[in-house]
Image (cartoon, rainbow, N blue to C red):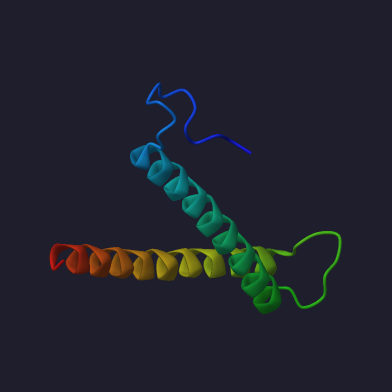
Length: 92
């Protein structure tokens, strides 16, 4: 484990800014992992009828389009969520 209070020379006090940045990075990594896992699961189930040693042309196109649509949907939801968070913060 890492020591959040080390290296700051602040007499052992925790640096809230540093902690928040570390939490933000961890959340971003978790979100990226979740996105990849869900996209893989959904697109595989949708596009791959009979798994084999290689993808045929129609499977490749289906996977590419499925991933594009999934990313578009994810980005739309993320933008809406971030916009809502900003509005709520502004109202605090």
